[in-house]
Length: 89
Image 1 (tube, rainbow, N blue to C red):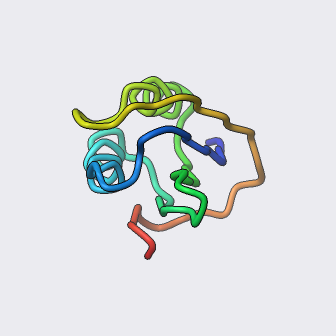
Image 2: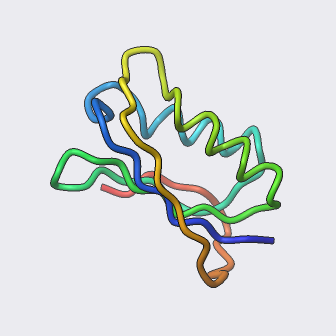
């Protein structure tokens, strides 16, 4: 199990990015959260197996239909043992 802190920049707010992330993490059995940041970025903390997390990173680089992703940055961190994945407001 690994824990990734992911920041996505670009046109990623107002395009259903968080809801689509929630759907993708359920498909991949990833736990954690996603939220919008005040600067227009989207921030994700995700825990799961490395293969699934890498699949999530690949998805983040594309995003949902109306997004335009500029960058995806991530770093590994200590596990927090999330119980589910949620959208934070």
